[in-house]
Image 1 (tube, one colour):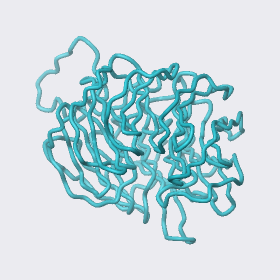
Image 2 (image 1 turned 60 degrees about the vertical axis):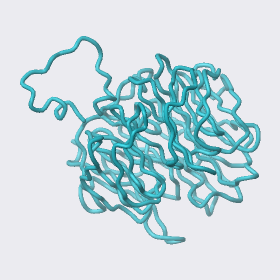
Image 3 (image 1 turned 90 degrees about the horizontal axis):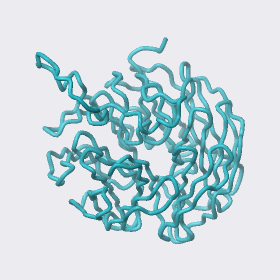
Image 4 (image 1 turned 180 degrees about the vertical axis):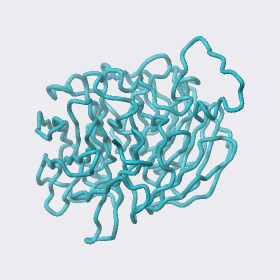
Length: 439
C-alpha cells in the first residue's frame, strides 16, 4: 500500500516519533544507494533489483496498462541477445548484450529521453562456451552503476571476466576474475555484479573452485575473496540491512548463507532451499527474516531468522527457481515456475491466497506505487495489487513474444527488454513506457 491508501478516511494523521521504514509502505528506501551521492532513489534503477536491491520502486505513478502501441514513450532495437535487465542512471539506459554468431560481448547505452543508441562498446570477442542452458544467454548478468562508472560481468575463454566503463562507454579496466568452466552442468553464467561501498562483489559458483570476491571499484584490484561450496548455482548475492547490520545473503548448495560484505567473512548459515538456485534472496527488516527459494533437484521455499541462530521459521514445497520473490509489508509474494501466484505471511508461511496464472516464469517482480509488475516468459506482464487480502488483478499486458529480463521502474517510467519472433528471425526491443513523455 502507499500513504494515500493507508490513511484514506482518517480525519487526522498522527505523527509518530521515530523513523518510518519506507519499504514497508511500498517505496524504495535510501539505504542501498546511501554511499553513492550521484544516484537517486526516485530517478535511477542502478543495479539488479533496483536502488534498495529488493525489487521495490519509488511511489511515482506509472502505467498499469501498456502494450507495443499503448503508453509507449519510445522503443529501440537491441543488438544481439541477452537476458540482462535494463540499468537506468541519469540520462542513460544500459544493457549487456551478446552477438552469439560473431561471439561478441558488448555494453550498449541508450538515451533515456529518446531511446537513441548513444554508444555500443565491445568488451570481448571469442571464447564463448560450447554449451549453455536453453533459458540462459551469453549476456544474462545485469549491469551495475555507481553513478560514475558501470560494471559488467561475462563468461568467456573459460573465465568470468569483469569490466568497468565510464558513462561515455570508455573502458576503464578489465579483469579476469576467475577460472570458470562447468563440466557437470554446462548451463553458462548468470549472477550480476553487486556494488557495496568501494567494492564490486562477484559470484562464481560451479563444480570447481567457487567463491564470492570483491574488486575495488576504481582499480579492479581484488580486496577479498570468500570460498563457496563446489556446486553450480546461479544466484546473485544481495546486500540487506537486516539483523541490525549489512549482510550479504545468498542461497544455493542446500544452504541459506550470510557474509560480511565488507570483508567476506561468514556470519551464519542455515539448512534450506536446494542444490541449485537462481533467484536473489529477499528479506523483511522489521521482522528480521530472510526468504529464499530454489528448484533443483527438489522444490523448496524457506524463511530463516537473520539473527545468526539458523532457525528455520517455515518452509514449503513451492519453487521460484529462476525468478526472485518479493517481500513487502510482512508478506511474501511468489509466482512459481508453473505460473501459480502465492501470497504467504512472512512470519509463519500461512497461505493468504493463491491464484492460477500462466507460466513458465523467469523474470523477477517489481513493486511500484502499490502494484506488483510480474512477467512470464510468454510476454505477458501481470499487474496486481500488493495485498494479502485477496488476489486483485489490475491488468494483463502483452509485449513481445518472450520476456525473460525483469523490468526497471523509476522516475515514472517502465523499461522492459523483450524478444519478438523465433529462431534466426528473433529480434530484441527495449521499451520505455510512461503516462506522459518526460519534459
